Length: 221
Image 1: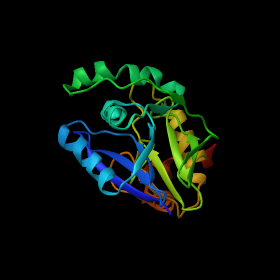
Image 2 (image 1 turned 90 degrees about the horizontal axis):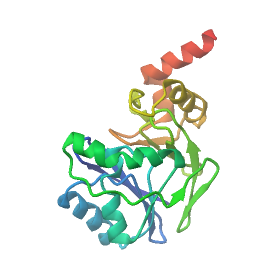
Image 3 (image 1 turned 135 degrees about the vertical axis):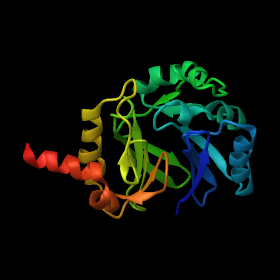
Image 4 (image 1 turned 60 degrees about the vertical axis):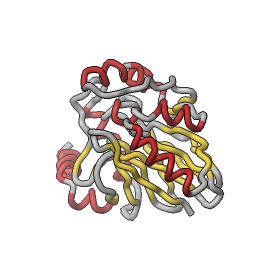
């Protein structure tokens, strides 16, 4: 059985996740820690639970999701894993941080490319990778079918969806990712997004105004 710990970091209130299981192995997803206090909060949790970080996964490489990449790399010897389409996004991090006035230690380059159909393995746990571009050109989501949870990054939120007005984003791709990938998952799947509270597929099908609009448009075609 997996344990999902969420930490809200940096000025963008980004959700960083640590997923662990009974083996003590864990993965760190989208480390957004940007201050010594936030870095200590992440390290203290991992230390207190005697976890062994084995992988660093970036669902995508927007600045708020990579601010802690360098810290995680230095602390646990991990290198980022992301889709190859995120290379230019990651490489723009220093300029974006400078534009926002954010403290930023440059992230190591992507060491392993993620693709849909691959499986993330750690300890006794496996997670399926879904390619869900639109918010970012190489956005990935992580899905656990047996325990019915999804790490959606910035594609799907409680009552909302990811932005599609950023460099590299694409509205049509985002709609396709949401409707033909995420909305096809079972309703009971719990969704852990990159910002804000958790939700479920059923909740978003019923209450999310964007999903209702996309569904109506699909019916008219």
